[in-house]
Image (cartoon, rainbow, N blue to C red; front, side):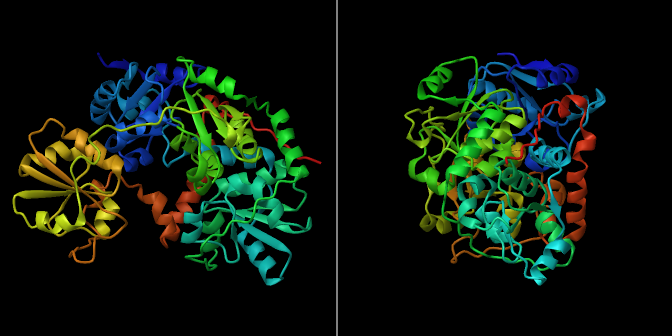
Length: 524
């Protein structure tokens, strides 16, 4: 099957039309984060075949791939997708350079549609904001307030506002009544930066919570930039769920206000059998709940994260997205936001008690075919006829690696093995990276074995080394430095990040602004 090409102007029209389309930036994540199309999904070539069926479940969907010039890794990615059975593949002519030459903007950062949405919500809904200075004054004055951190437990553990409680945004409707009993208590929602602070605060406003509600300006970064001390290592404990009549009534109001379809199992089955549309089934509950009784073929998309990083779960624009929960309020609350972001979203009426399913996504026999155990690693590693390639992320390699190992990444793998011996040992900590590397070398006459590292460290009997400069920054194409440095004590990076976030709206063209339909809702 021949690979088709599409020029930038035609792609721009496709992106803002009503037909389903997926646009994949197949460069590595660091490259993507430096400059990419607004509605592109990051699907690095290193992880492509492992992730694509989840992100683009319909093989006949129109799917465009690109790199920086249209002649690099995108060509290999297009060929790989054809081998996976995708039937309507296009290369963006000229890649990001061709897009820019046509007069269209490129954007830095990640999760652009979601983060831009947060900025637009604040602008259009006038979400109340409290500064770090004012919050500190509340603490000193012992005012009646509560700080709720709208991020997942893992992020809360890394750093948090002193005294804050972890309640991810997707859990607010389900747990707020257990957290706050006095209507005079001030509620402050924070995240690491801006988006989830704004969306969390506005969620409570939209649910009709009568307390004074605020988003913490610039989140933990704003706190740190004011030289206030953050907590580190706190273990999050969720409040007990409580759904009362007031919350149920508020959720019904959201259904009516945002015209959210509540669909039956029969309707879902009809959509499942529709070969002309892509369909996603998303469990918006916590990971623990999903692992207990998630529906077959569903993705676990904790609600706050589904709003914050929609492109990490849904790779097809104009697809059908069906949400479910166990309580009837979380899925509706999340759906109300996705509707305003321009998505075609519905809620499964029977929730977790539904009988629906989607096909489970399977990788083929390559995964695990040649894995070795820790007991065998030492002996194999001592063999001079083995070339050891560490295919973990560049930052993981810097932290600790076997002394004679070589850092390798899929786009450069075939070039790296030119000087390799006939036997190769892969060190990996991610099945997606293992899968991509094995596919890249499939057909080569090589004896490949894989050691799957569990956790961040090698077994204690192995001597390892670390390096702050190997691989050098320029080679770390998988890592986006400016996003991460802001959390590692770099105040300049934190300031630049916040300037980037608050500057997003100004970069949009009118078509991009029109993707959203934001409504102010305050229940009385």
